[in-house]
Image 1 (cartoon, rainbow, N blue to C red):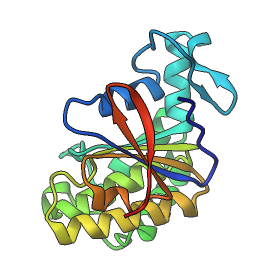
Image 2 (spheres, helix red, strand yellow):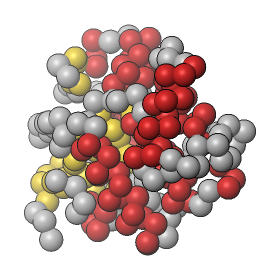
Image 3 (cartoon, helix red, strand yellow):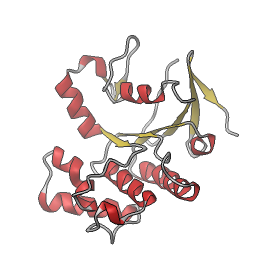
Length: 202
């Protein structure tokens, strides 16, 4: 099955545990190589890129939100968000400005000097969303981003993730086992052993 994703489109991929959802994201991110077929991002076939070019593509064009927040405990919230900019050679005042701006968009504009231990799980996932968007990626990949959150925090994070991905003009792929989470997307596909198939809205 061919799967196309347009700029600004938000797609959910559903599947049971072990169905290959995370492997699919790894393939899209160029972390794994496919046995067949092709994966293109903005017209670039990932199979034609070497490891160094794949690393640059991930840094420049992709944003990641994981189930675990992956924030560094010894850095402030703003410093955590600015990390992707540092990897791109953007530092100093510009990195600080952009980190503060995106933190404001996720409702943490007054927490930029806070340490991760001072934030709740829902707030830490908002930090992760800010970090995924700060370098203005073309594609955001979210792997079970609410798996460690309570129901209320999960609902807030899902709304925020969709809103901010679309506000930045990025495409987004949400991987989840939850139909409620999947239904926040523009469309839903089911991943099974036989491949991908579209799911109708509930």
